[in-house]
Length: 183
Image 1 (cartoon, helix red, strand yellow):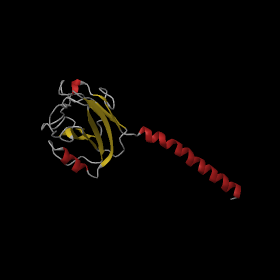
Image 2 (cartoon, one colour):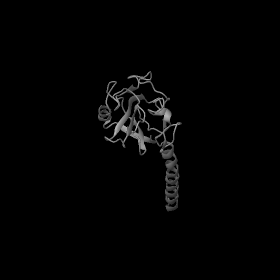
Image 3 (cartoon, rainbow, N blue to C red):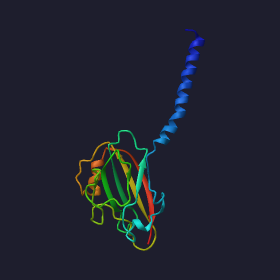
Image 4 (cartoon, helix red, strand yellow):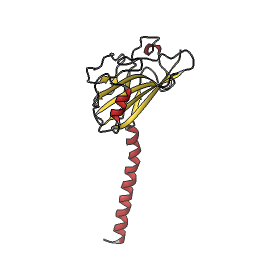
């Protein structure tokens, strides 16, 4: 092999690596894990329908871009601005990996037809409990979904703490959607 042939091979290899690197950001962007709702945008006001001043039903949620190897999802909704500290509004887990949305008004039962399980919120009820802050400044409601590499070994009616403990070491990715509400 001549020096010129070796130089051509090196240039071609470098070009191939460079072109491959140009494609990676698009793949990363396409795979970004995100959580959205058709009912409200990130950092937008949650409609009354999904609060204690309305029907107090769960909003519709959708997620996409979760990583390969995802076996199940868990969703926790919290109000970090509650007067007595962070208040948990919803704990739902073992959502199958082939499910990428929750429809409006998820029933307040321990086990859903999909196999997903619901835990106890800080209202001491199963399922979703909507925003119900005291009058005053707006509160943030953080909807956080976790992509997990396992189905959690936790029965129905679990607490947020039990679910978080079971998720330890099994979180592949997480995404958040924050809604705002005040009375």
